[in-house]
Image 1 (cartoon, rainbow, N blue to C red):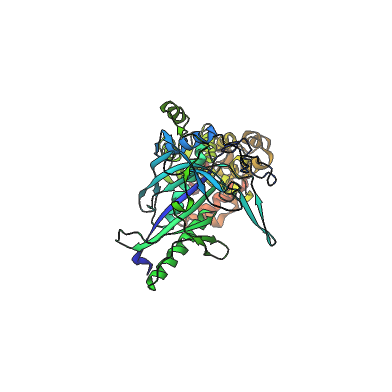
Image 2 (image 1 turned 90 degrees about the vertical axis):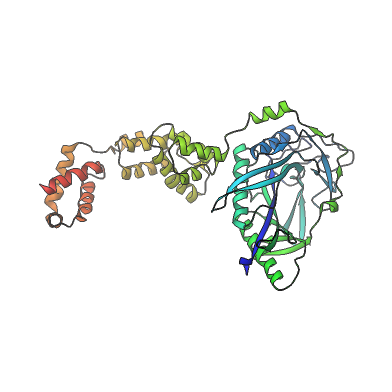
Amino acid sequence: MLEKYEAVIGLEVHAQLLTETKLFCSCSTKFGAPPNTNVCPVCLGHPGALPVLNKKAVEYAVLMGLAVNCRINKRSVFARKNYFYPDLPKGYQISQFDEPLCEFGFVEIDSGKEKRKIRIKRIHIEEDAGKLIHDRGGDSLVDLNRSGTPLIEIVSEPDIRTPQEASEYLKTLRKIVTYLEICDGNMEEGSLRCDANISVRLKGSTDLGTRTEIKNMNSFRNVEKALQFEIERQVEILEEGGKVEQETLLWDADNYEARSMRGKEESHDYRYFPEPDLLPLQITDEWITEIKNKMPELPNAKKERFQKDYSLPEYDAEILTSEKPLADYFEKAAEVTTDFKAVSNWVMSEVLKVCNRDKISIEEFPVPPENLGKLVGLISKGTISGKIAKDVFEEMLSTRQTPEEIVKAKNLAQISDSSAIEKAVEKIIADFPAQVEQFKNGKEKVLGFLVGQVMRETKGKANPQMVNKILIEKLRQ
């Protein structure tokens, strides 16, 4: 049944900007303050209080527009979006409507089968509403700390066709805003929020079906689940001869369902009109150039550079550039060794394993990147074996010492003296005559056992390549 249809999906992504103060006043935007303490007459909507635009918020919005290939409009206009809700003290939200700051951009995503271009219709600036808290018994509480916090809303064209593409598009935007350091991308705290408009149609059709809107999706997984639920719901309605109603749905992740919230509003329902207390926003070419010069290296460019400069596979580069701090950690570790693939392997396996186990970020990881690079260097030079390196790494986690200090203090340097290794090999050959005889009779798998015994005899410090070479020579004599 589902195979007959295709979804048409557009996302509206709200990113909370990392400014120190709110969009139109000097109140702090710091998360976690006691309720209703970061407020003033402006963000509380008191009569006569006038908004003053935050220049840094405009700069961040332009930066995002440039990063996703948008046209930056030299003139944009703020408007009042009128609706009534307990967390909106003014009874309207200052936003942008028909003259936004950024338009006609795009990002590329990997759909799994091919690279796809998702067009961005517009990016505009607006202030956030407050927050309603419903889990305090039978009452609902209002916290207006968030009211007036600067947002950008990134509106895509309906170019997305699957829940997986929607998730990939959202991940791409999250990587960009975090690389630009204009938003922390925290979906659980609401710093990055997503609403989806979705309809279904028969494959091959160019007509658009009736769309619904889904809200309250606070993770990439929930975006996929909610969209899949709504696709199946709409298809079932159409297959039964029914009609999809245009409405706004609230995603309930606990019960895996979307519940009707209200009828879907159109723009005229908000009675937009130009904000009378703010002049049109004028952007000069000089300012755009100044902002463009602050543009950091973006995720895709960094991924390509990692493949080229460090000769890394695409998979490694994709993982390492998934977060800017992780990419920075890898590069700092790679500065002190030339074995870049080994550094990549250690970061993706041992480092990320510890981060996931201890539920810490890469910024909180206890081993400095320079020390990880030095550890890889000790392996490359043959100073220690890979097995010993794992023990050194564990010691580095707990003591914060450098790998050289640990190797010296514990006498862990690898034995590369051929005479010492020969002595150990001869002892093992004498101690295990049955296995030696098996090897001579063609059972070469027993070699691994004998190598292991030599390594045990040398407490893991013998150079494994030399052990193999000398052992085979002795066995074949």
